[in-house]
Amino acid sequence: METDSNTGTLDLFFHLRNACADEWQAYTDHVFVRGLADGTLPEACFRHYLGQDYLFLFHFARAYGLAAYKADNLSDLRQAGAGLSAIINVELALHVEFCAGWGLNEDEMAALLEAKETMAYTRYVLEKGVQGDLLDLHVALAPCILGYAEIGRTLAEGPTAYVEANPYRPWIDMYASDEYQAVAADEQATINRLMTERGSSGRLPSLTETFRQATRLEAAFWEMGMHAVKSS
Image (cartoon, rainbow, N blue to C red; front, top):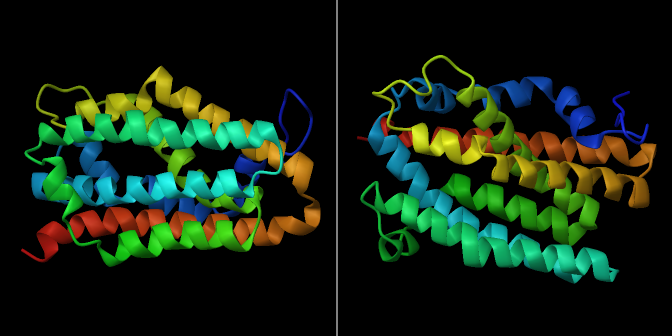
């Protein structure tokens, strides 16, 4: 069983990632991701994804509000509050600025209809948080936070990420950055801590299923981006 080299305890993220290896591969090596890597993703697909990702971030912020409600100590409450503030005051602003370069403004994105994949994913995360505890909620969030970090690192190390013609270099840079990698490392440490404090081996089947379903919904979110071409 995967352990944290620093503590000798279960490294929950690596355990879940390995237990859901097929779903994880389908998510992190999706055709959408491969198109980002070599710059061949149709721009219409990327713009469609960016608009839905704006709506996703709104519900992502709600998930941190739920985490604050679920907190039963000041440390977890502060962490949830910091996450909520970061999304509302920093990440959304950066997303809007980034999207402006792709011809999307905030009013237009706010007025978009949610794709069914956006609704399915965000409501699933919120449902797991409502039904369970902080550990359940963070496991449902982990494929997004930690998956984007892995994708960013992998794409940045690829041979075509920084060729002159790749228009997706700024997106790759964003998720490969030291700042985002630190966010992901903090999230990995958080789920490991929550597993130590709240978990047991008896919870692993349920947590694995939550992680599996959230990972499948992440892959579906990429597929949603491809619909811009399939429906045109």
